[in-house]
Length: 203
Image (cartoon, rainbow, N blue to C red):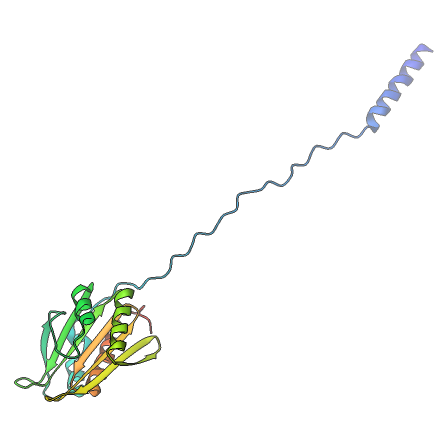
């Protein structure tokens, strides 16, 4: 009898143990990872210009078609050399301090027929200063596809003078001659030559 009771008690204890569910393990809560703040995107800046030579800026065939058939390339001069057409202190200062600048001249030998072409790489501040000075001096301006053109022509006791200025990105082009029919195509030819040499230059 004692043996039966012992077995019964053992079975009851095992039964109670089998029915008892283990306590669930605690589920770890969500962990917060530090948020990443995106780095600021640097503002784009104009790339340095690749400059080309005078006779690439304006091949002699184009120079002759814009000016006269006996036009010759007269050479490259110091960028800040005075040209006497519509002098402005801001023009002189920019040519003297530009990181890159070129002055080219063409003309008819043994005559007064000469025209010049300046090309310079300018900073944003230099460009703003030049544009303001040209507007204040009475130059008319027009914008076409991000290119700003300033032009002026005048007459004096000697004859007529004309100038065309083109600005786009960090490029400044200045052409001086006796008529806008020369300065405008000369400046535009230089712009196209520099676009070919600088594919990333603004259209």
